[in-house]
Length: 133
Image (cartoon, rainbow, N blue to C red):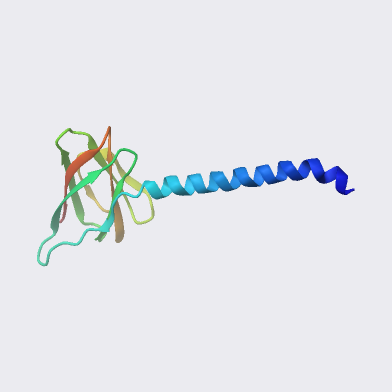
């Protein structure tokens, strides 16, 4: 019986090695796409913030912002080469804004909103401005 499984043993070892290689390759690719992950904090007595950043092609910078339902969120982004935009997601993951450079929206409910900044081509240095009213 052992002689029957001998040919399969080599194939099983090769398949195991291939699986391990793919797992590490995928994990390494995810680690390379780090980007920024930060919470936007307003200075005391203010309701706006301006952030300077840079994002590499293939990456995205993610900013979290605590806000209440009914508040207005104004967001604008500029880049020297006009090659960056942002998307905004609600606390439950619902996408409210897709690939814009400026917008003002009324927020549906309380929680942490995500502003995701991504380049449209190449690398991008940017200035992101957010205001809550």
